Length: 96
Image: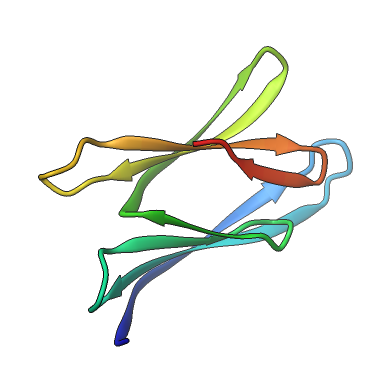
């Protein structure tokens, strides 16, 4: 497998209760043997792979639950979609 790393982005999480920060990374991958994808290493050491590239990042709170939202950039054949993570104590869980 030939793998080209196109871009690497950092995301800093601020704990508003303690003032502590932690870093996560988004790596945009373009392998020659599969469609493009984003590798996400979160603030808690978990690793995720999601298809396509993250175009923008949002957050939202619904009924007391906090979410991290990746708005994905799809190619022409696909519909744009959103990957949704929920913050659960000291963990992040991919919901979609």
